[in-house]
Length: 309
Image (cartoon, rainbow, N blue to C red; front, side, top):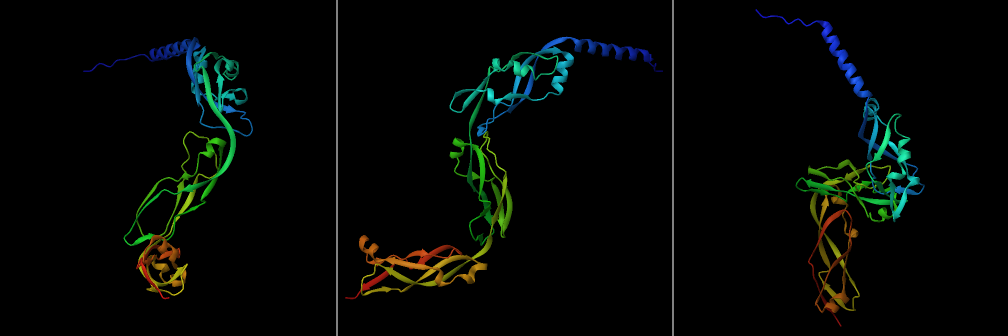
């Protein structure tokens, strides 16, 4: 038969009370400890901007009772550093000397917390001249089409550029901003999606637009051909060409197939080019063509000529 261990309830009461008083005594003692604080930078001068993300937190060696240190670790407001009190080193490089901001930081600590030392000797940051500039955007779509399908026109970005503000010198280095990479497979119809803008890391650029719309018009393509008359530039009197028309082979979306007509194209040969190169034929070139077609080939690619005196 098992014996039951009977512990008086008063024992647990004394145990809890003893633990409580032990904690109370220890929290009443004074300790020296390292505490990590977040930093807020205030009073940035007008027309100035922080170029790169500065130090976000600092470590302080402080002294206080266990109660005060515990409450500080649980909840503490960020320390504010006044940017008007920075020192300039050279160019856009500025800094705070820790010894010069001791009293400013002490005044922001909770009552009963004494600042012994700022562990960082100095806090470096870069401050530049605020400017704004319109930057074009570049899509980063990787599209795999179904067989026979393709884009009917270049991918459209709306808006195609954005206004961003930041350091004047840093903005000059940016020629365009990429959009996030998007992979699309087995595409056979129009694509409409939103894409995030990729901003340079560790740079304090600001804009109200973080993402844009991308539109990719897609159609099934087929090959077409059309005969176009040839014109001769710098032609001498009595010149006669063979053939007088050439065949233009192109690739076009089915929805635009019936819109392609001969008057949308201009084929020209330059007689002076042939004489300069010392060749006995003319070279036809496309001077203008419809944006409805995406691939163009000329047949034949040489034009014979005779000059009758």
